[in-house]
Image (cartoon, rainbow, N blue to C red):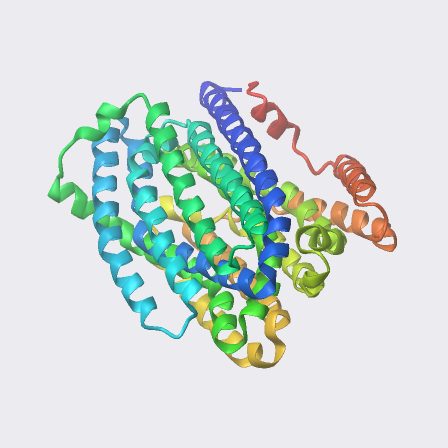
Length: 486
């Protein structure tokens, strides 16, 4: 193997280490969330949990709008020009902070004039502070991501999550003891999330040793160029979030907070699963960007990313379908039993989303943000249109089904755009073998789906793993690269 391939292998090992570290950090966050969600759902009930979920969703929209794609563009440019990393990171912080102050203020004012209940209005105003904190953290994120040290950023995030989770747990316990109003307790829970974000910011500031790089002043020309490049990507991000979460907002308008609560317990678990491919591609993105000028190396890295996403996404999707009753009973109890069916439907979104994550980052490197935006506009129009038609009668079952249809269309269009952009198609041999292995696992275990959860999981891992090995779905070259061997 030549020097270039050896270098790719070495840097791929760094990607693997970053991804593993992030997955471990995410696992800790997931465990923290799983520990508090059963208490949160049982304490708040479907209706107030629906208000909580709506605030979290609206906050995610605000976060995406204020990001504007600036962090991703700054990271891309810093990966290609490391000597400008500090300057780019500083401009990203300034742009995002100014944008957040303006857009968050407007959003809070608009929501206060709507007919949403007071817990939603007040909660959104409180959570807007987390968006400002996230903007201030942008510079540290750019430095850590462009230097392939995302594991440090993950560490800061997990510490913040643990703090907010611990505070949430304490608030609920105290509220039960003093018989406090559930609405008041919900307000305090939102403040706990703000404190967690502040802790995360403080930890990332300590971990980033190159803090002096952020002292560059405002550079108008550079900032304008970054903003101009970022706006299409920002629109892509917002459109993508609308594609995924418009159903929650439409449920809150067309149905009730109870429906929102039932649906979002299912989606809460989905959010946890979809964080993994995002972390993985965040690690791969700088590596792909650095090899943009070497088509052979770029294609090799991209193919490995697709294979890895498929191998991970298939068992998670099929496993969710299989164990949905167990998961919902643990997370919400009997009062959320209706969440099982939408979660089973949404399990197909997991598989499609894992495959979809392989394409946008490669297209961003090719400066095809506007084309991605057009795809997402089509997806959003389809999603919103179908939800408007079917949610009034079908509620959360219709919302989950529409999500699957929208994601399938999005994957097919993104794949077609990638083929047109690069002039070749990635191989789907490994993903198809993974699906076959997952299908075998599902067929064998489905009759026993009511058995002990732990036994089902262990059996699923063994059957899927055996199927993957028997079908030779894992490329030995991928294993060597992930272990850092030429």
